[in-house]
Length: 318
Image (tube, rainbow, N blue to C red; front, side):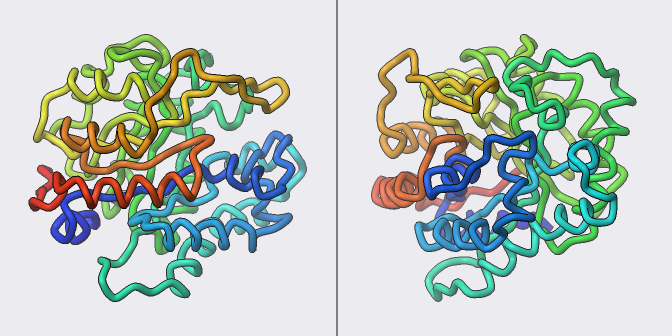
């Protein structure tokens, strides 16, 4: 069963949440740490649950867990015992489930919880999700991702979010590994450097084609990339084969050395205005990533509902 279909049947699109780490920082959290947002799983889990809840109130149909930077290997590197690391990774899902449990709205389909699975770059914590420049082969990437995927498979998450994937090689490894968890559905989202290429340089269209015929993948697209390249990326791939997902960052540039951001190179349109364009261009799942806010997600949801373009039922081809 496709977990996204009830939401699509009701409103014609799926509203994702926005940034987690940078929103926590905006609320006062200090995330200048190798574990980034995963640090808060131990230090202040209530702040994560509160942010999930705020996104649901803003209109998000899917909330993404704080497990992006939480890997057993990364946690071991900063001193967490294996059992504690596993508990914290699974806690990321529980926090989202708890937020959903205390949220209620009779006029909306039940929101979903997507368990975040970030790239190998999250272990390096050096910003290489924007380059894909790390020296692992297919099997080594599978072996790296397997422990966290196995832990998340034991939770009640509704689907996996394979996200910010910078290269075709890592996408192939994740898809191969996903087959070891056959009951799980997932989306696959790439980090991209321009309107035609993922960050490592491969063709976005060729990377999207990897999921053709894969029944476990319910959506494919782009995340944590500049908003102004999204339209071109959508236009570069066939429509109707899989649902298309887009959740870009604010367009600003991240600097891993000091965990800072600098202004975008271009004057970006507002995210709500661009969201309507992405829906018209074929995207079914729309949201935000780094430096996007709860308020922007609320504005995007209202703009998409008001546009009328999402009212027709969309069926995801599997």
